[in-house]
Image (tube, rainbow, N blue to C red; front, side, top):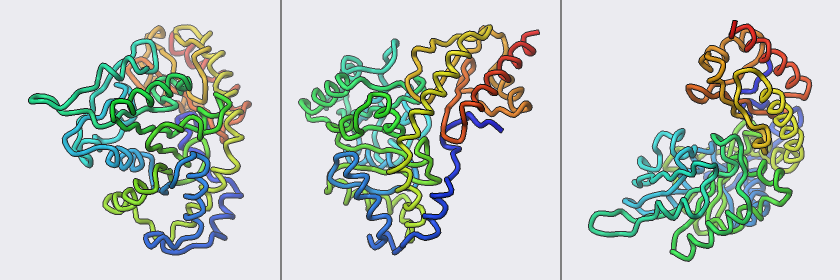
Length: 345
């Protein structure tokens, strides 16, 4: 199968599997696992933060990050299409006791002018804004990358108002590759950042949450509350270290393959897609013009050996990763083209 559903489907490499077998371990709840400790140190260094914490999932990382920056009864401002808003089981409300205040930017990524409209001050009828959340790259906007100037403005204006900023950087290494800058530059002015080891970087499990040393110490307690004390987690951290140190270089090929897909898909009948909008490894395209529901197209593709999900009533998503070669992408293009021709008859 050519699996374009997500970059979460990547399989651990042979080097990862060997590192997991040979990993030196200890009890991480006591901070005694040397492999986890080294992974956390490297994550802090790469993000330019004081400290970092290894967590099982990106959702847990975002949940803890928001908790660190807010108080019960506040609001969190984020984009209306954010992963935090739609795909994390309302954890901001459940764990942090905060309301999500979504903002919209019709033309793409929200800028400061959009976030500013969602801010609220404490009053007789208002709950105050506690923090702002940014998603970079932005999943449901097709892997779009925040320009550095926009990030700088959002963080500076937030700080001027006494507000904290959390970045859902699940794919921030993709953003760094696209911009040609270090991850530390992108997250420089955020208070906390979460990034996934288990997406394009290819680790089988795990994400990192980075911030100040004081916040990270609190984050360790919140992780325990959420059931994230993983004991001899060095077997997982060993794969994470390889993902962190060696796999960012693979993302350039993923981006090229996504642009290859986008250019070909944009020319298919009934499809609406601007190929120039594809910046990283996510391609979202509208198939309303085919007159066929995306789920039916997805089912037809699966029968022919291609996995590709629908993400709305009219849209589909293809995500490239290191387990999908350029040849696989070319084959997927031919199969999708044939499916669309057959399904429209």
